[in-house]
Length: 98
Length: 534
Image (cartoon, rainbow over all chains, first blue to last red; front, side, top):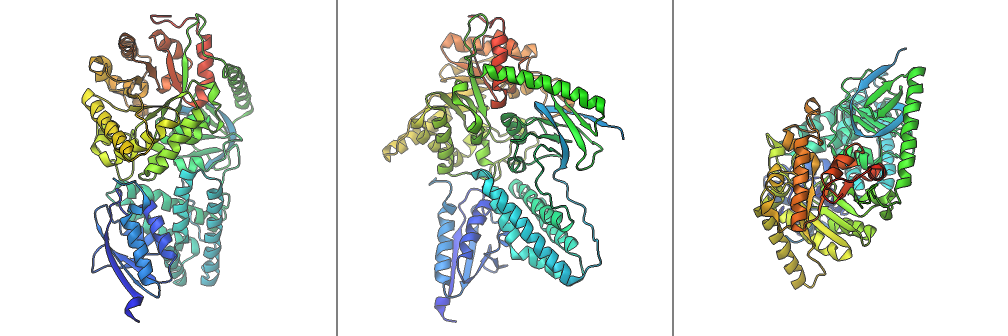
């Protein structure tokens, strides 16, 4: 597998309530749009969970201010990571620009 | 077979007759056959598909805010990680119902153990999908109550209320519950009869029952005499309701010629869907908690709902209350558990302690203001400093929006009078644009009797002389300083209370839409307004 098939990112959750239901719905819906295997963790050492599973994503209970680690494997991995990191950085497109 | 009679507290008035439909109880898990893994796998697959189809159905007819909650459940249901664990248990010889219930019960326990309010609240969503699937597996496929059913259980979630078609009657009978809950507010505004605090009632699903939410009675398996009595009482109520409806298009003028402004309280933006704006003089209280039911809404979501109500009301005034969370109205991700929440960080106190969340609401209000006659009020004000701090945020955000070239307007800013300190000593508040008496909270704080506590319900009397004196003092203060005063508690919607309220000098009442006709009829019946100009 070439390097182009692998991508990683770390982002900070600024959403006021953290990775809760509404942000998790948006996040997993976006992740499902990519073919790559995408995983998420709240620490660099894991545990890594399937970013396409809302049950697993919610179970990370990532609160506001916490760091999120993303990694993907597959032909569209870089695009997937860019899109998901962007969503988190844009505050899940919620809450205006406070 | 003899009837069972239970007594409760009226949360929303009216009558309903129909079969009992159980809510919120987990159906019994019964392993009917020795488990055959292949067969059980197919049964679970079918049940998951059927539950998903039922949720998709719900989604199609839900209001946007309810649809969000349902979408979350839909995604949980579609998540392979839950199903995979259940299939694994089936492979090990467990039947489908036990396997599914086991996986979900573990998941739910994780949510219930969370220290975060918001996560604990999500346990209900998981329990909901667990039970939907189980109902398919155990044969009870009737997920939706028949029209006209009486929903019966410990408590009812707002999302469950919104999923029911109430256009063909029906009612709610809860062994627990509270008259101040979000569901009770929805029931009052939609005219769905509702009783709470019934305690333990011996009844089975499908039992015929009569709900008398005037005197607070639920009769299960009624006899012919009870049916006859119900028919008489409900017909009388309907006739009264019919007569009251005749009062709807008329202005509310007392026999001695005092014109009373009759406004409506909205708990939800959808409350106006069946309401003709010409039948009222505006919106006296639009609550905004519904927007925060599933986490924090963004500026656009809020702006859309505020603008919708302003446009509905056209040139009539619309008073929107900034977020009144805390107390018995927790907001996921915002409120924190407190030992004494009614005396804690609620209303304006909470908003001022979360300026980022407050500023988002303020910007949405400022941008909506040019679309109608907006007024904004702050809940739980105890000191003038709180009012000034909130006002300063409005002014700062207004300036920022103008600088950015965004259309906005600074609306008149007023306060709720519900903390006794304000009613006893209103002098510092001469600079506010208007006063709105919140009689529910004022009563509970004056009488030191929680309205959510059935054991002291008798003390929480809005017609107690001490409460009426504070209302009269507030009206007199407003008159002396040219500040409009209105009252927006439940007392304004109780026909028996209206003459007493008018006697304090009040000339503006705000009531739930379902109570508007009765309240107007009561004003028109009132022989004299009383008060200083009556």
